[in-house]
Amino acid sequence: MDIEPDLRDDRGCVRMFDNRDLMDRYSSIILENNAKVTGYLQTSLIEKYSDEIGNLAQIIPLEFGVHSHTHERSTKHFAKEVNNSLNAYRDYLEVEPLGYRAPNGLIDRDGICTLMEYQFKYDASIFPSIRLDEYGYSNLHLPNQPFRFVHNGNEIIELPVTCLPTIRLVMSMSYIKLLGLDAYKTLMRLFPLPDVVIFDSHPYDYYVNRIAGNIHGWKRYAHLRNADQAFELFQSVISILRNQGYEFWYMSELYEHVIRGLSNLTEISVEKLN
Ligand SMILES: [Zn+2]
Image (cartoon, rainbow, N blue to C red; front, side, top):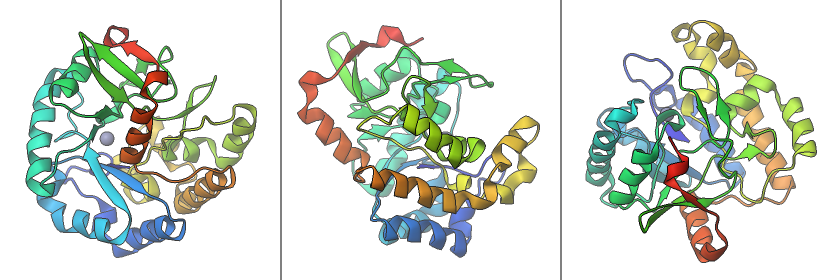
């Protein structure tokens, strides 16, 4: 889960942290299913929500990664965001982060190299799909399973958000709400999920109907599809994965697992990125 302010909320609020009921509903799904969450922190939130973030980590199995400092999307400011977020993360948690996820999956060649320089163990920014809106990218040439980026003798593990194979449809709360669970179930039968599934979400995915006034144009309708059933859909996705034999791991556990099988891992030059 990318722990960041609610969509287009000027005050930087996270309603899941402001509202006990939302926090309880989310936490109980995680607890009842023995699930685990890796929360990529937008570190500017720490100032406002340090207590709430800490509480969530007391209630559910939660580890942290980094999701920029201010959610700046322009890759021109990537290195500054990494530096600032790393400092805030260290101050707050007093450990080094293992992984980084860039805002909106926007990372380029220099960005991956920056994460290598800052000695992150893995990146989790890549959506091996295609996106057509203002944050557009095409990553269809990149693997849909963990791989390693290499550059001048350096490397970093990439743990990409999972897509359904072939059609490269992203496994995320937002897309599942948009297309509906029945569509996903059908597509999952036709294009079975790979062994590793990295499932993406945000706090606001569970209550986007409460912030609909912030969202304009076609995206408002897209976000509002199935919005009332978000928690139920999340539970259904967890049940489907469990029934298919998946176990729930932190991203750090996945990273350790991937490292053990390093020699089998596809190697991709960072030159393959823009
Ligand atoms: Zn984000």
